Amino acid sequence: MAYLSDPKETIAILQKYHFAFQKKFGQNFLIDAHVLDKITDAAGVTDEDVVLEIGPGIGTMTQVLCERAKEVIAVEIDRNLIPILAEDTCRAYDNLTIINDDILRTDIDALVRERGGRPIKVVANLPYYITTPIVMGLLEKHIPVQNITVMVQREVAERMQAKPGSKDYGALSLAVQYYADTYIAAYVPPNCFMPRPGVGSAVIRLTLLEKPPVEVKDEAVLFAVIRAAFAQRRKMLVNSLAGSAELGCTKEAAAAALASAGLPETVRGEALTLAQFAELANLLS
Ligand code: SAM
Image (tube, rainbow, N blue to C red):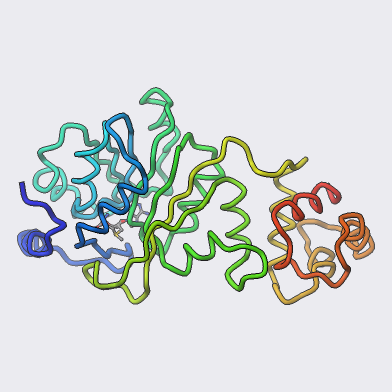
């Protein structure tokens, strides 16, 4: 069988089907076997795993996943790719289910339940225009997932992994780190894709935590505090909190909460750890 990680095979398939890349779907197909191995190794895919692949494209990574996993579910929005996958590049695999749908509308929880409910692995070279809604959707909906190993824009991977005080630290870092441990497995240059994206990429693995690293009375308040803190990151936290319609607290209440948490009144949100945000949220709950 022809493997698409060989760029010549990818070109042959694209020409055979007169495939036109759709920019609106973030289509940048992988053409590097080494990178495919990096992603599947980082995910630790074994023959016991059910893997959800988001956006299989012409099936470059799908081929590798089908050979390593027990079962692969591939959700692809572009209907022009479905016959290529089903009748050609992935025809040989009987452990593959192809679904033609938008991942943001797919009931992933139902797909997991139909297969017995054992936590799945999510592996993808993501369409960059919807990285955050896809990843946050998987985390916030508490879908049974062991790990999420995805190619994303390098800058996004760095934001997910960032710690307090760094320029990349923000609401995304805190939201991701509330649910998962992060590990950047590889940095990937544009020449590993066809067509080449205008940005550098990285493979990040998010390993879901059994329980969040901090205890909060109300998750909604925690995330409202985080959103307020980074809405205008150069503002002092006391003003950000008082200015948040979502939180509806007075400047006095915000100042009192900061004081109880042992934080100076001039502190900015970018300096606080997740544990400090949790303490503040509990004081404001
Ligand atoms: N996995 C392939 C690879 O590595 O070569 C393709 C990756 S490409 C970066 C992203 C893929 O996601 C494309 O095939 C695109 O059509 C698909 N896609 C874009 N938006 C999607 C959505 N909302 N739901 C499902 N698939 C989507």
